[in-house]
Length: 266
Image (cartoon, rainbow, N blue to C red; front, side, top):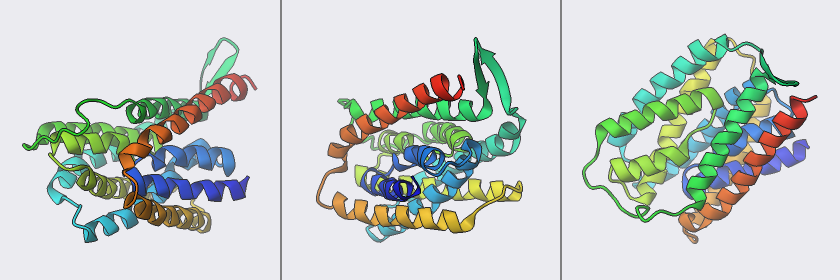
């Protein structure tokens, strides 16, 4: 299973390199199901893996001129505030065992995985369904909406360890007036900023980290982002979104069924 985990870790980077998001949605399930890591710890590990991988991708996009600093800062600051608040103040307050639904025991770990799976389902729909507004670029940046969505993405990143690229990219297109390529590059910078600082906050909180393992998985994901970036030069990432969306949808439904009807029942 570990070999499969390292192979799937490449997919994390491929997705980030192709469409600027989506890879983080896979990281926690890979850590939990293929590496058998506790869901709560997996959210911390995910922050590092996604953060360092996104940083490498952001540097590549910087060289291509696809990074826009002002929208990145407007988005990242409120996002970081809500992320640190969730991980420092809220997560430690959630008890290990929450409640029962009939004979099903809902624990903190199950809650994290189910909420994560629901997020996967929502993200998959946004990837599968194409809207008429998809290619519209707003020329006048909307700073307040951008900051508001940044706040929301910080909540997602803080609770689930997901980068939130599927939320960041549409926000940058519609509210910052960026092109798709600029949105991908800027999204990677925001994801890197949030994820790595969030991981730093977990270290301050005293969480135990297996750095050798993290570097191994991150190395595979970084390999993936180089592959994804090369593929993106030949294939439009928008064309791959629906296929990736269906994959994420199936994964999300599988996790919900597994956690609620097998793990909780067990």
